[in-house]
Length: 188
Image (cartoon, rainbow, N blue to C red; front, top):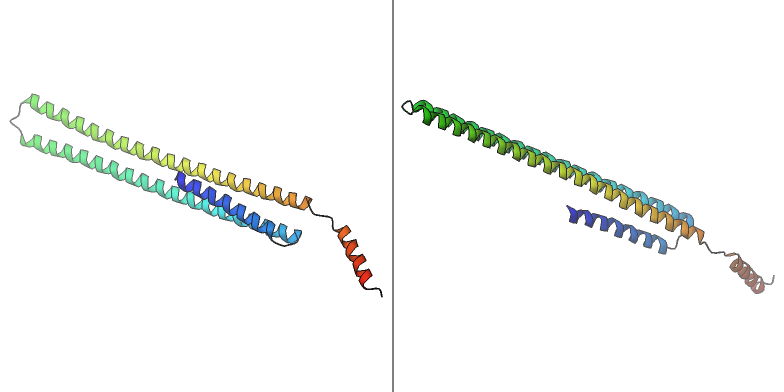
């Protein structure tokens, strides 16, 4: 899960960087550039939101599967304990000639086995619940990391846009020179 999270973060950062470079190198006006940047930012935020939703959905599905399997294990252990107890009980009915001490030992062993199976089932259920909680926590952390990465990319993009807007060159001198050249070449 950590590898796919790092891959997702790398893909988002790389894609954002590529989009910014492509937009900055495109021969467009400032207004068109801002519109393209705003549109691309919205697209990346939507994509990040989609990936976050997918991660949450998959994590929820995994948690459900883990809980279902833990429940199945608990039920199997309980059935096994019940079967063992039933078997011991049936055997006890067939052994009328066994002494009271032997009978007491069998009951104690049966109870110990039942307790062990119940404890094992409870432990398995606890482990499954802990694993499920860890998966949900990891998914939430991944979701927050993705949001932070997208926010950082959007902030960097906004800062670069502002920087580009602040660096707009002054074309008034060039305009005057062109005007003089046109007048010189067209004396009418």
